[in-house]
Length: 180
Image 1 (cartoon, rainbow, N blue to C red):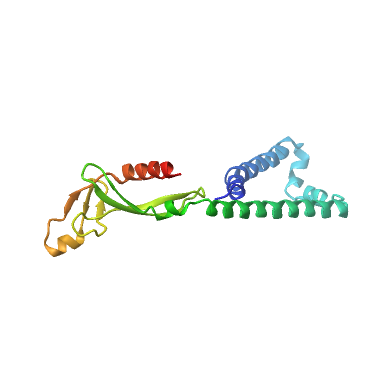
Image 2 (cartoon, one colour; image 1 turned 180 degrees about the vertical axis):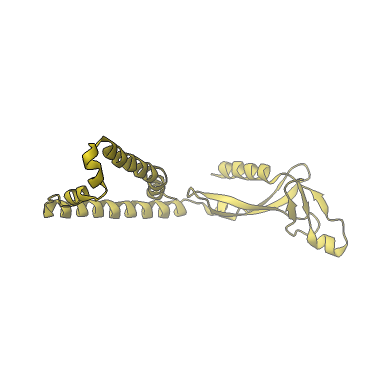
């Protein structure tokens, strides 16, 4: 997610509800401050007619539209350049680093790379490989075990205690940073 998208999300998520709340309370305060004889005509919304009939110069509207258009196209251009630069900066040796051995048992792990929500290229989908048949094992994260379904179906021992995948993730990131 680039900076402009984060800014738009922040404005919509944080400022828009606040603006609507503040505007509603402002209108309510206007109503409360009116003299009693004028409160009946407040909800006829004649005051909105006066606001909407305010004189605007055509050149001011065109200028505002042009300024907003230029800002929009510049932000799009900057966002597209940033994403292109990021893709080109990833070295091939890091893209090829997709498996390694870890821990005292030297268990083999594999992973993939993908873009996270912050626009960073990071390793994801960590899987332990069976030490006997080198097939991805099915993890049980709550008990820190992984099971090889191929070995289980073949009648071989299939329970293997493996390292925690978060520890492996941290170690992979550390090794990638050393490669850079």
